[in-house]
Amino acid sequence: MSNVFYRSRKPYPVATHAEGIYIFDTTGKRYLDGSSGALVANIGHGRAVVADAMAAQARRLAFVHGSQFSSDVLEEYASRLAAFLGLPEFRFWAVSGGSEATESAIKLARQYHAERGETGRYRIVTRRPSYHGASLGALAASGMGARRELYTPLMNEAAWPKLAKPDPELSGEADAECLRTLLEEVGPETVAAFMCEPVVGASDAALAPNPGYHARIAEICREYGVLFIADEVMCGMGRCGAPLAVRLHDDVTPDIVVLGKGLAAGYAPLAGLMASPDVHDTVMNGSGAFKHGFTYAGHPVSVAAGLSVLDIVENEGLVGAANERGAQLLRGLEGLKARHPYILEARGHGLLLGLVLGNPETGQTFETPGLAERVAAAARAGGLITYPGSGAVDGVRGDHLLLGPPLSITAAEVEEMLAGLDGAFSAA
Image (cartoon, rainbow, N blue to C red; front, side, top):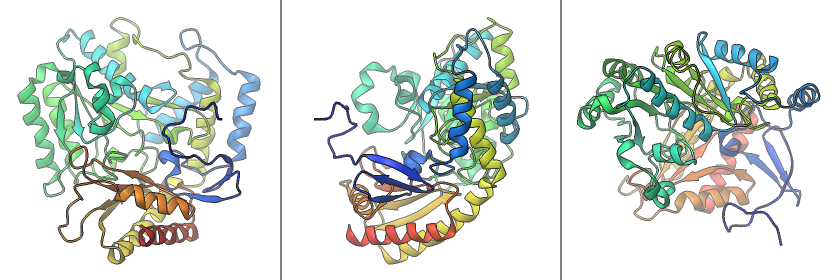
């Protein structure tokens, strides 16, 4: 008997080691990591230079508490990260995971308005579907029915208004105007922030609004005094072919950017947020402190991993590689769509791509979900890891498959991944 509390009743192979885009288990089976775990392992597995950086940091300084010290590695990383993201005046707040980062952004938005005397601003507007994390505040912000349902009695639903997801039939500007309508309905003076994933991840694989959306969203937020939070936990750090996915089409700067996953690329727990000068200064010139914190925030070993990962991303040109290999993979997915009628749509940016699955006769999703799970199981049996999901339409219906291999994947490995998908669809 194992003493591990697993995430579900399904059997779990035990991983022993990983190298590049491959993971190996105790039976010797090799898996192509077509989803980078949960779109985390951006630089691939087994990078000794990152492990060496972590070990050196652990020998030098393993831990200090953020209420007592900063560290040289945190100071360097914050400056490097701000420059990489094109946010030179922003401040980095470090935490351990994406859910903590979202919680931090929510609380920071609330405190920002309180420091300005607008204590009536408490609502956080998000979209349905969306996924912002598993902790209670992050889950309340999420518009993902199946994950929220059990815990809704613990949430004040009035605090979390939901906007409809991006509509590909509308121009970006017209689509964004739906936010104005919602703000007027709930009372803009009660809203602290609007938060969205610039390219949607787990809840509606690789869905993105049309150009002009984020620029108009930013304008509406400024008009109503609402903060604009870009949740780039999954889509940021080069994953979509740009340092920030919110800038793929629009020249826009959010007030807060939430980051995770690709920061340390799975080598250590690291996430955080970037806060604009106005947000930072309003809080610090008010009460003098952000009334929030976590024990392991800014952990030096995790930050050292992040710094080493950023070196690799920049030195190996992985942001550009995400565009090049992503275009190759998307072309291949379009080819699969032509051969497998249950693929209704292939979409995405860079190496954050999605397949929408459904009934080819109606062009709609099936009433009963399960196709994505069957395809993912067939892929896994063939040695390919994918990220299946459902519920994008109404919380139940809407099968999709999220794909996001490491940004370091080669052209030959993309073709291997496509062959694995082809076989999985044939088997399922």
